[in-house]
Length: 159
Image (tube, rainbow, N blue to C red; front, side, top):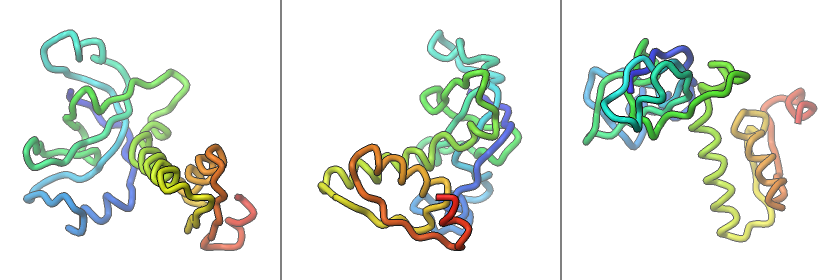
């Protein structure tokens, strides 16, 4: 799938990746960006992907050496597979959709791990961040008590 990128999220993992401190390391040149949103402007052959042509999607870019293709979400266009695309409802804008993958999947994975460990509580640092707020909601839904810290006093009021 070729996606004309509209918006891309900047996550801590992107910053680590650009500094060469992430587990995946790619040869230069490359364009970073794990996730974004945009419009599908071209697809490969077959019925599996053709229905996405012209659709607005959230997407995740896979950076794997075996399937490495230059051009992450920070590019004007990005190539990814159809399994890494989520079609967007009309009421979801590109800016919201640009962060559909990294933080939500990280939060779900963390709570699944807590459930496996039968945790009764957890400490969430920087709880006013996007992922912190997701973790609070997921912990509450799963009967895990979140113990939260924030960076500034006004963030405590927000929570």
